[in-house]
Length: 137
Image 1 (tube, rainbow, N blue to C red):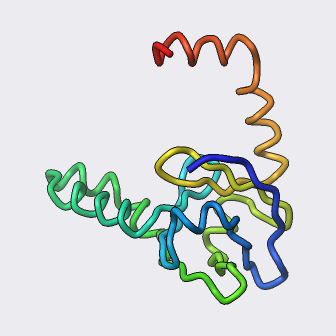
Image 2: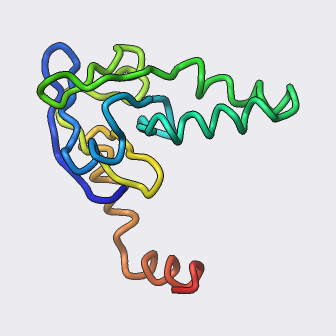
């Protein structure tokens, strides 16, 4: 998944999912907590994560509890929107303006102001050079 998309939450907490990401996420997918944002995972990717966690020792599984306990199964409505539960909106401090960011195997949902700050820190020549060097591109 790639790209950056600006959207707004409506008064009911619904988010329009960009068409390009809908193709990759599918009609049913999962949204859960991440660091300062929310992550959206396709059903296929979510199932892989469940299987991986199910095979972990109990202590490791317990570390994953917040990710799974706070996950919501989301289904697109006829207009390409999902309803983000209030708990998830509160966690990520989402109000109205949000930024959806593709990050290879998932998409992130950020408060637009928070994303602007994070993006500004990441989009420096020094950081981009470091990324290319570390990834050996």
